[in-house]
Length: 577
Image (cartoon, one colour):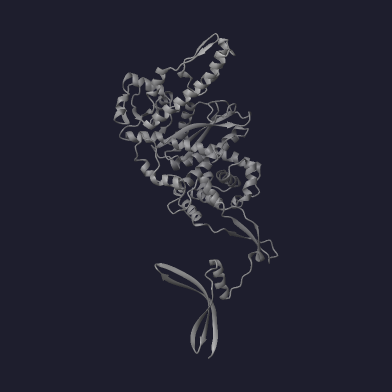
């Protein structure tokens, strides 16, 4: 009997038992015996990890293996995936051409600063230190950039602002479409900038100077332009200069301005009436609502059956007034008012206790003490303090409180748009679109882009800094829209336009499921914008150097993206302008 060995190999077998499939990996030797091919099982490899079994299979085929560390060194591993994501979005947006049609050192530096602002917002000096931990400077060829060069590039950017904003307006503002506009402020570190002044503080930073800036966006919230003003400038004063820029410099002839009641006042409307092609949507102030209730046109009884109705009034010629009632908002305001009233009473009781114990007797001193606390929570108008020698008492103005409470949850929107061009429900939805600008301000101010605190000394640098942050938000806004399915965002944007315009905005069932389970439909993790960038940053560019080479030549070996990372990059590659 003659045996002759032919080969040793790994065989994978499958068998089914009671509906289940069982797989085994066997090491077998094939040989010939008396002219017939036979197999002998040498070992069962099924207990080994899959990658070890694959190595055994490849070794039996004749491949040789050497430890990677014996072949090359990994010189450095800068983070790359999040840079790739931002650069991909900027490429799809034609961002370089938006800045300038010709390539230049200044354009590359601005691109790098905008990308860095999205990825890791920091000071210019810190940015030149941080971005070397990523592939960003090498991708744009600015590895040797200094802090002074970045400041010079900001000056170049400011000179290009008008041209850039004109391109954005052409891209994103439709003729006759809605233009959202609102003003906010950011506090300033220092005292030397001419723009930094005291004003209506929206950051609740007492004692800080501030700078005001207004943001122009289309109806979807995509930023188009930004204007910077002194910190003491009132909201309405910024509106008309912005309108002039849109019409005369950006060529937007027909538009509908959407602003809150503090922005589009009667004085501004009187001016807007004189220009053809300008419409507006805003809301009436509370004092005006009281007058309309007292004179009869605003009939509160109608809200017993409906939550929205339309009416006109001689004081608002050629305008439509849309009255809305939100019961949930009414309950919220009533609860908040009662909390503030009680908090104020608690402060006043402290003063009364001091008077009763004889610590304060002089009426002037009592009045001074009361004045410090009565309007701490902005409801001092609802109290009637009684001060005398060694005596202090107070009471609520119940009639005034009841009159204010009667309008809880009620608001009236005024517009110049005709019914034919804008139905009643659309008027309400258009006014609520202002929340898109508020979202932009939250992103600009907080951990998203960190526009504040502002530390620049010169007016031009402050303007350039805020414009740079707006451009970063422009990139981030498009990335967030592209990533809706991966983020905790609501993907059902069409349904949003068909819901009850007065009722509080509610997320779709799918969005609520994301929030509740913290996962997507496929079981993968749902993300915020920041955590998804962090996830992408784990893709690194390993710079490797062969050990056998006498030269300093290196090559890059990128981390293989996970399915989740690949999907995020694919979605960015679908951005359309």
